[in-house]
Length: 276
Image 1 (tube, rainbow, N blue to C red):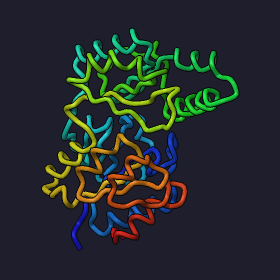
Image 2 (image 1 turned 60 degrees about the vertical axis):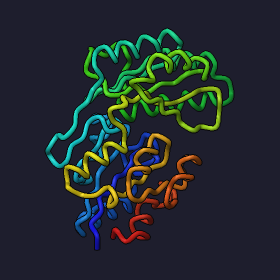
Image 3 (image 1 turned 180 degrees about the vertical axis):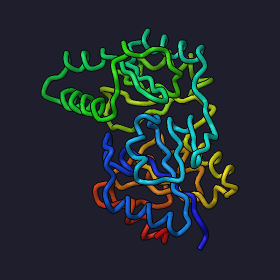
Image 4 (image 1 turned 120 degrees about the vertical axis):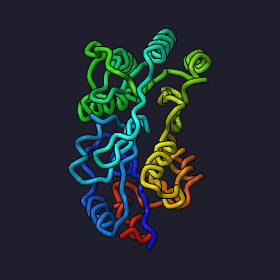
């Protein structure tokens, strides 16, 4: 049996979005796969602070911050925060255009409180009120703090929420040479949710860096994800799997689709493809 290097996204893949509790079936599958000699890594947009509650389940390493911070075992093999110039330029142009920001550092995340104020002002009986409840839950679960508490720590990624595509035009013009804009496929126009990620890394490059460190071909890598920030991961790995609860666009490029995160998707995928 060829040993595989398996990369798992977290939110919407290993766990329900914003949760730190994977299904027992997924934990069992990961443990059994490692016992059989496969490597299993987290490959996530979460920073180290956000993913750390999941480390108790046992991994061969992780790629945090969309590939900006990578550890194999106890070895740090890649560490690439934004430069001070990059950070300040991005923060300023987003603020000037009314785009709400969450900066993700290694050990903490900080968000514009103005986003929740905006939602409260516009939260009638529709999507805004639901989005407000979701946002407050995510911030509590993942320990996202107010921007006033940010003290200048190195930033690996900026998560953005824009009221419109129009407000992203100028930030994209200014930043797109150095940063990729990953827009989530949400099927609605009212809020544009996405990430700004340094072009020096992404989840696909993280797979390449880990496989190079392990002296394994990327053809023996398996990537499992659910959203468009997993696209490079699925394109780089020799085999890519999308969750049934995942993005329509990601399903189009996946080699297979497994059941949703709430229906033992990871376990079913590991079983189907003989990782356990």
